[in-house]
Length: 136
Image (tube, rainbow, N blue to C red; front, side):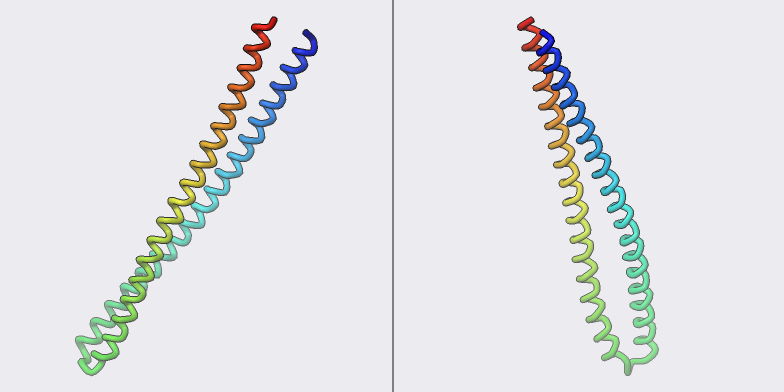
């Protein structure tokens, strides 16, 4: 009887230690996600600033081309460069969205795995207690 009690106490301690470890891991992951979100906000702000700068430069080029027809060729080259920049911006948006989705999927996968492990550990503990209770 005393051995069973020690076993149950040891099992409870193991479950508690597992839960504590999982909670710590979850907190660390949440902190990391918050840090990454902060970095993403900074990058997004920088991106918006660069986008505004690009739009301002484009407006300036259009006005200059209206004033000086001789600069038409140079304007065409700049517009070509702008297409490249827009394509890069579009790719950056796509990459950013994919990165966000990837982080979200990773976080959710980690969270679900942790919760599943915790659930399984608790269920195993409950089964062990139930079996011990039936034996008593």
